[in-house]
Length: 166
Image (tube, rainbow, N blue to C red):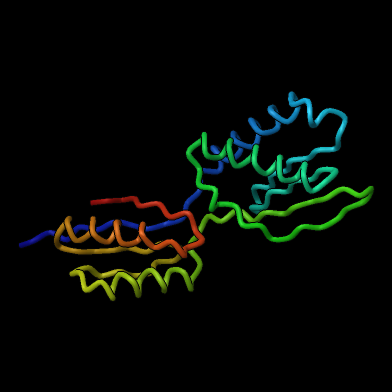
């Protein structure tokens, strides 16, 4: 009897690594000459899964965003994990940008992934389980083909990870 193999597609984010990346970004900002004497704030709210960047101008916000993104990449985090929600002016001519931290696959994206897997006509069975997609099949080669297929999908917003390969 053939044993079924499976793996999970998810968008989990290691919040500890995210905190470390934010702390490193704060350290770099505190030592950079171009941020001396300027109001700069990097605030990570883990419970609400929100990252707030505040500074005195749009150019400083862009530099701040680049610093945070580079620290995330160095920590092995996907930059797709940050979804810009809004940019707003705050008191004193300062600018604030709010990012939502993406750590789950949304329903419509999950349906799009499942549809793409089914359209590929591979002998696998994808199923949506909460914020994960479980793909089951008899051959490991088919599962690896599914991973390659999903990685090629460029229009996805979530930072996908593949785990529980058994």
